[in-house]
Image 1 (tube, rainbow, N blue to C red):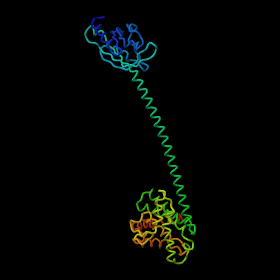
Image 2 (cartoon, rainbow, N blue to C red; image 1 turned 180 degrees about the vertical axis):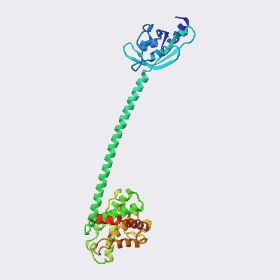
Image 3 (cartoon, rainbow, N blue to C red; image 1 turned 90 degrees about the vertical axis):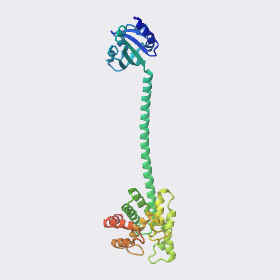
Image 4 (cartoon, rainbow, N blue to C red; image 1 turned 120 degrees about the horizontal axis):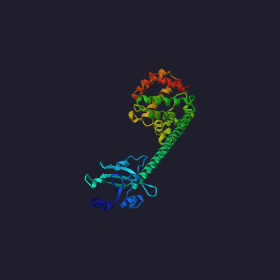
Length: 354
């Protein structure tokens, strides 16, 4: 071997990567110890062997084996070396010309950088990514199951609370001939007025069902007072008025009943401050209570009571208009009038009185 090439082989032996020199026929004329170790062969076993027999593509066909022995262009590709035990060693192969002048021009340098560790690490990362993805999907599915259960439990709790509300309301109204129908009308009137006033659907619905037990405190009022057909004495009137505070006390302290407690206590407060039990006025009266006060009076006027016959619905609606600014919030009266002129109030009364 030419002296220049012999000097080069000393450099190749010092490399930490596999390296060979090939001639123009693609035959290995020198292989360093590192390449021999990587392929499980002695350096002498590699000499005079075609380089292409040592290399294989990870895929079926390796056109690039010819590229490595191309003496004109540098080349870098990923391939596999055949190990003596039949295994495969993944490497990055780089082919470089040594020069344009003899004797260097007669040889080509090819180095092989083993990437087994990187491949293994990539495989672990890929497997880990798959595992993480599977766990994420399982967690998402589990979360969806939990969300469905929470929605179902919430719906069940709402139904249970609604059942409790209606039972309390029916119990408080049980001594009236209009049992049940009155509280259903109040519920739908209140929800409709709230929506017309500009509250969102959820809040309006909450005010509607919270209005149902507005008179639950009447349970504490004796029958002879509730059913008295004539004028009440001052003591009897005081007993009747006590139902507002009593209703607030009866209702559960759970957050679900917070609006119902406001309504029970304050649905007899007047806009001008002349109502009971606290003499609240204007915006100091909770909005849900102001709404229920209006629709409760309307329903009472347009229904039969032991002390009066039902007023025609037109007369009852006119009475609400006339009391705007005294008993009732003027803006709520406007919302009620809009519903009345659109036929919504009449529709509710007909549907919930059947």
